Length: 188
Ligand SMILES: [Fe+2]
Image 1 (cartoon, helix red, strand yellow):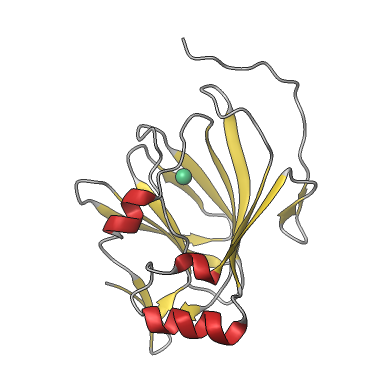
Image 2 (image 1 turned 180 degrees about the vertical axis):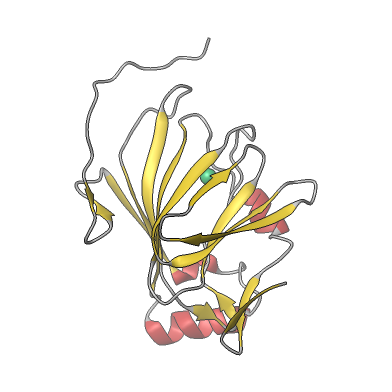
C-alpha cells in the first residue's frame, strides 16, 4: 500500500475578482521564452521575446501538498491571450508520469480549448468558456489554448502521485494546432 501522509484540513480562498488564489505557497511564472520549439512559427516567437522583453505567457498558483497517492493536488492556471504568428497562445502540455491518472479543469474566465491526445494517436479538443468543466481522462496528454481576448483562467485538480511528463509532448507535439485566420479559430 503506498504511503499517504496524514495532514490537517485547511481552506484556500479564491479571489473571484482577481481570479487568483489568495496566499498560494507557490506562484510559478512561465515567460514566452520557455515556449521555444513549441510553436509552428519559431521566428514569430523570437520576435515576441525580442520585442516585448520576454512577456508573461502563463502562470500557476499552487499549495504545497504531499505528492502521494490519496492526496489531491490543485492549482489556478492563468494563460495569457495572444498569438505567435497565427497560432493562439498555449501551454506546453504534458502527460502524467503515472499515465492512468485523470484531471479536472474548471474554466473560471476566458475562452479556449483543452487540447488532448493519446500516445496511440487519438485527438480531442474540448471547448472551454467560463463555467466549462473539462474532464481529462487517464492516458490523455493535455494542453490549454487561449483563443479569447482575456486570460484563460482555470482551476485544476489532479491525483497527488500523477507527476508531470513534459518530454514526450515536447518531442511529439500534438496532431493539431489552433490558429487565428481571418479572425476565426481554425483547428488543423
Ligand atoms: Fe495534468
